[in-house]
Length: 492
Image (cartoon, rainbow, N blue to C red; front, side, top):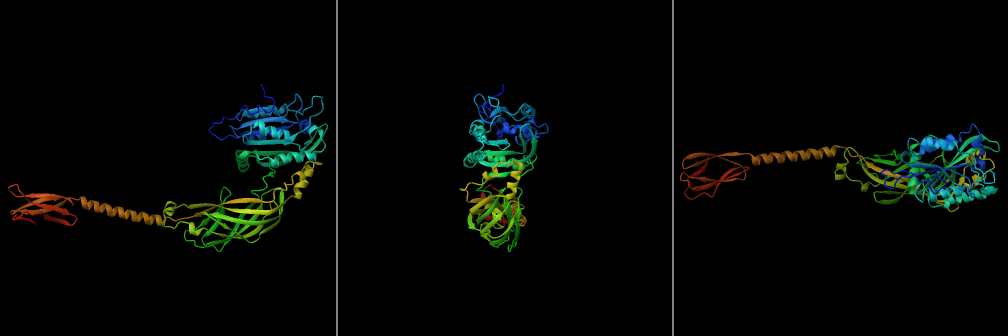
């Protein structure tokens, strides 16, 4: 029997002791009256889009919840569960079947149902996820009108207040999509898909999905960032390095900046020319004061910038920025150090970061995005709601920086050669010490041959069997010791 209401949505969630880090996904699909053309238009790509997106982001083993929402009414709860399962081979068929039977909802009296976006998102966080981390996806036509309230601007403000003031929502993205559909009652030009990362694990999971291209395979439009607006707002891309012989910069596979330093580099500073990029689509940084610091090798030092102001920095339009960076050459191990020997043939890595701080930050929604929203959602005052909260007046961007010193194999080979020479010398000494030596000893006119090793002492007896001397053997020869008075003993 299918679960109704949002409370039981995660009945197929991954056990807490699972060996892999499964991500709970909650898909909220609007089916209020305003969505009528998306359901009634026979050419509508709405349901296939939801199916493909759900199967693109929810990986095998993840828990997936699909629920329809409008606005709760007596005996008509919202959201309402359609699918609650762990993603596997049969998930596509379950999602397709559930969406095929979904249509616009009506109130108990027969009128088309209203919409409450805030109610749906809040229920998904509190009950579907049970207060745990995950990702909530909201598919809507952006008409937020509980009880058919025409003050949609105020309703949108309440919705975005939930997003900006809710500490559990770490990341909020919006994907405005063109989708022209014609129904019996309404016509629509666009659809909005929101992604809300709940908690630290939800944020990490959403970051991985975006980096892997899983979302981009279904939605090619860039996401509009709603939150956060106080970190990771700009990016530094190195263009060239001056006055630093033996130093070069590159971007690593993980997006981190990598400084490659030769072992003999002694220059304490490097003049670096950057491109400063705005990463907060769709916002323009109207103005801000710039400062930067480097944290390398346990040293926290200011970075001298060629300009401390930025104005009208739009997404996708980088501006040049000069800087002087102090390199931690004193903190790098010498080429004869143990660290250098361990890193021979590869690189010694000194992790660090460059922090860029924007103070007195003023943001504005770009005009191009306003125009696009007006085209997709005519008459919707939503772009005004995209205006960032007035409390966000500063932001920080952290650029990971790895300082790498590439040590050659020469010192290692030299040290290895010296070690081999010492070993050879030791082996020769050991052989010399252990090698048997022959000594000719004359006792009472009788010549005897004795064999001994270095360090050994052997007694010498006369013909009567009395000990008359001792033979001591060293690395350099033999000698007679403890010679008895009157004894006729000599070395030949």
